[in-house]
Image (cartoon, rainbow, N blue to C red):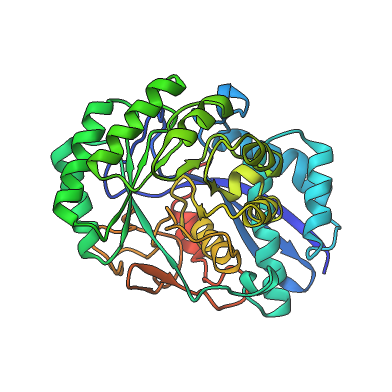
Length: 384
């Protein structure tokens, strides 16, 4: 089945509340949809969630925007891929890498769409194309954004009431606030809740970051994500930490994963399909992590249903992905299964809500992404 058309366009969903993290300037909810058409009338969807103000260590990864992603897809990558076999996903990724250096969000959106259409052509969900399920559901870690401490405590308590057993608590701006909040959440939620503090590189020099991590552990934190910048400082923190340290900004692709392992810069890796340019690149990161006995999660920038479905498909198939996934629980307006947990948007672009039970998203078994994209709603939220 040859590709006949690839198009990208921007859309935006209404957020439930303001969600922010250290360094984030742009508002959540802005996406790029990619639509791939093939011979025989098959259609696949992909997504990018670009942020201009987020990247890797020492500004080594550049931010992307809805405008840049749409341009790269519509003017450069899309035209070059038309005529290729839609199921040749590895060849497509190699072709994209030859055409453009970086721009991984644009590549990710196309990669997801190609996997979606491949699954629809053969009648299988993507997780079966990736080797089959190693778990029946994907546990969710609800993100508590940067917000006043009293509101953050309420957010955590309400998310726990929805059944999640892991929270990602955003911090990194004020360490004292983070320590107080960690202690309050632990007192309120007990020992069974996994509390993960994400500093987004905010705790400074390695020695200072190590001291802050030690105090967070005393307050009840279970693990700390990206406390500082760069592998040298990360390794310093990891060597002294009594809890697992997770690399996020420090790990984008398989080469970063190899460097982290060699430097002993983290105990775990947070995998984004976007950072790795899609399923093809992310699978390589997961393989390195699995070989090094490094637990992983699937994370992102709180995608719409398209990107969330891709995250679920990936997590179902990867043995290394054993940590709670910081992803949305996607549902159309008025049908969300939770009051708070995984509920970042008031509406979404899928026809039916994702099945959610015991704090986890259940397997998506329909062909491709496993969801039906509501194209009318997608057009309704289109903003380009």
